[in-house]
Amino acid sequence: MDCGYTKKANMKKNKNRAFLKWAGGKYGLIDEICQRLPEGNKLIEPFVGAGSVFLNTDFPQYILNDINPDLINLYNIVKSQSEYFIQEAEKLFCAANNQPLRFYELRKEFNQSNDVFYKSLLFLYLNRHGYNGLCRYNLSGGFNVPFGKYKAPYFPKNELYYFAEKSQKAMFTCESFQNSFARARKGNVIYSDPPYAPISLTSNFTQYAKNGFSLDEQLLLAKLAKHNADKKSVSVLISNHDTRFTRDIYSEADITSLMVSRTISQKGDQRVKVGELLALYS
Picture 1 (cartoon, one colour):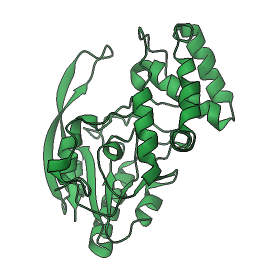
Picture 2 (cartoon, rainbow, N blue to C red; picture 1 turned 180 degrees about the horizontal axis):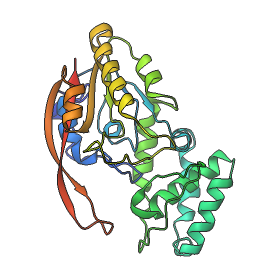
Picture 3 (cartoon, rainbow, N blue to C red; picture 1 turned 180 degrees about the vertical axis):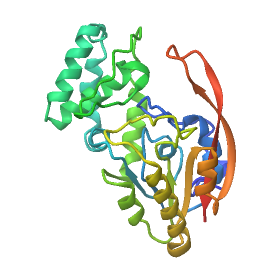
Picture 4 (cartoon, rainbow, N blue to C red; picture 1 turned 90 degrees about the horizontal axis):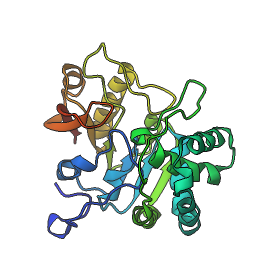
């Protein structure tokens, strides 16, 4: 399959990186995902995350959703005020701000601020200076990722400019995945990258947003995918762990198995192969 309307012969050899670090990001699986994404006039992503699929496809239009309002506010600001945002954000990437005390001061300001522009600046700062690029909140909704201890955090200027340019074709939404699916019309394509089902049913979910993602929601997502394919002629591609549970709920999809390297140690130096799948409803 082609990636949107982009023919393989004309696809860029160099992949585009997201400007955010992101747990579970799809940069390493872009080729496999693009090979399986059908053509369409619009790509809808109910769980956009850092946007690697968006950045490496060429659909005429996009609807990009995430349940995290901080993330969507950031994307809208980069889209509409890219020059000023990049200019101001770069000022935060200095040696004086790459210290534990300063990091925790700015994290506190982020959690207390109601200024959307300033919070977006700090969201990028925290993402690049925090531990492993995690995005995590406590039960009160406060961002609580610790300091990352990086020698010189990278400021993603080129990646920000590319995102700003590409985002002119996108509409960003902050709503439930059910509402994102409801937006789909004939000829659209949905790529769904939900919080992954646990590898074993006794393991816990990693919570990237304040709310978790239950097994019932995993099942509902699969049902919505089948409904959109059968009743609305909307192709849906889903990423998830390859487990007995996901094989069961995606039993009516065309499933492709993948082995993906994942970091498991706190130091980030131990990687193991984990089974993942792509489930296509078309």
